[in-house]
Image (cartoon, rainbow over all chains, first blue to last red; front, side, top):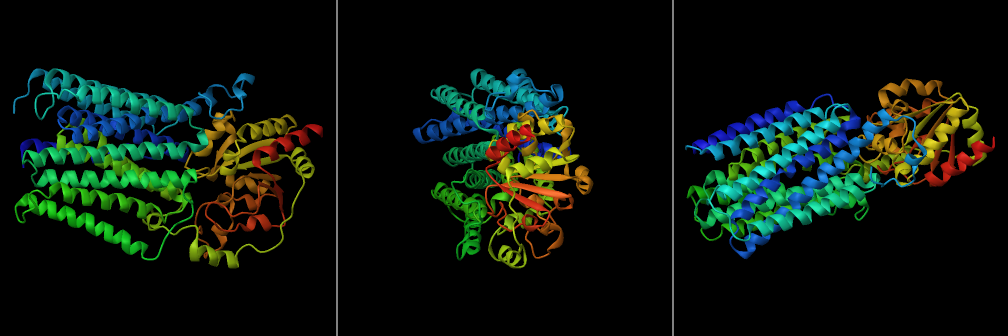
Length: 112
Length: 485
């Protein structure tokens, strides 16, 4: 085993322990946003997709890299935006308990 | 190995990005800091991607030291397409359909992780670098990525209604699932033994990996199919955790610190979150994954001994009078309210009642809606004041001194069988004690069973009046009727 791999595995194990500790006593209300937030973080595969795109030198590899980049970018951008949309609502209701007429539109899917 | 100044800088920038993920995720534990936490995590993501861009422009691939000619078109066009799709769907999706969207994002993330593993292995095989460790990481990453991809697609289909939410099993289902697992593990063993030089798999590596990936894809399907729609949040959370680990394995192959840390972080925290979600439903994760909940023999047994009696139907004017002259009303919203887009109508009714001096609050079950916390998001979107939303433990003692409990499109979370009938598949699940209220009004389209597919004896309780209507139309009529009083 190379030194680099030993170091990488050490980082891996410590990061797993951090992951176990980083979530605690979460109110059930936040379970969904939290899952969505964690979901965005594994969009980090975009970095991996960029790295394989850099070495892809034949059509099949290039197609694989291209699909991976599309998938990963969708994961990252969509994940953060939808999480923010969920959390935005949590915030707004504390700020304005009394809605203005303009805010009470019927379109539930409107952009917040 | 001595790193140059720029390489050192890049490495620590990656560590900084990973740290932002840790801090951001931790801040999402509390409603006060959650949104800022998500933005900090997003900043970490931007940093990681920019740093990777700098790496490729200045130093080229860490493996080959150069960047292939087509790399930038692939990266830029792919990011624009994927990012655009993600952005558009995240902005446009209705909040009721949000769980499906999260599941889709998880599917593509898992798919990307699996593709990275496959491509890495292909490169390693060509250059004869496929040693034991690389083989293990590649296979683990591709299996987890493939299972997360196909499993999440099925979960999305179930939530969206493309696939029946009911558990789907066929004869020999478990045997097939087991066989697929055996194929995947057998392929893994073959590749590892090949890398060790014990057996000769030269030339066959990619074929074996293809078999493993196909088995894993099929495994994801057969694993999620038998699980009822009500359990999908737990499944999605588990698959989410799997995608995280797949990303970490990709990082171990590429020796990239940010992939390793972010992936391991999501893998571990996702596992904890999965357990928290299962706990909220008083289930074990294993119990959920074994499936069969919400249908089949157990539900039939519960149905036979369950709800018998007559249903009392009530008219809109009666309900209006009951509510308008009550002192305390608790509204119990469920998914039926969300699909009917009745959040705004219910807030209007509540404001009207409050104007008449009625004390109104909302009882939110931890798993109301389609995911934990889903209902809070939906009601917050309709500007229901935060202080009126009450969690289950907090509001349950109040039902006994409540004049009217108004149940709108909720079913399983109010089923007293969860307390009283050990035969019921939801026995032991914490429920809202709606049946303790002095009177109960249920707005429901029909007597159809809830998502768990079981009867609810609350509906035949003599105290209960059934108001058969679509949640939105029913509430609109109710608002009009109360206004006339």
